[in-house]
Length: 110
Image: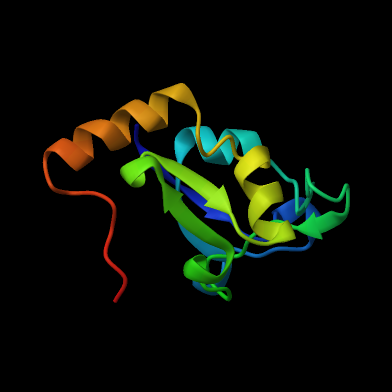
């Protein structure tokens, strides 16, 4: 699956092409996100911002489960982002299994 450039804040919401507003994203995740900036926490029903990889810590909002094949949200933002972006879709879970078998996944914290 190719990576694409994602506008963290979509242009339709005033986002720019400044590198600080861009990040690499999986094509599928970017398609699910579209121009959305908020999502729903499935546990509380609360509307929360979508996780911003430029300003927020992944480890604060997410963790690996099932040996690294699945992502679990730890916060309302994390849970909502997992659902919005379909981060545990069948395609990516299978890819993670392959990467685990090759010793390439899950990523290690810096």
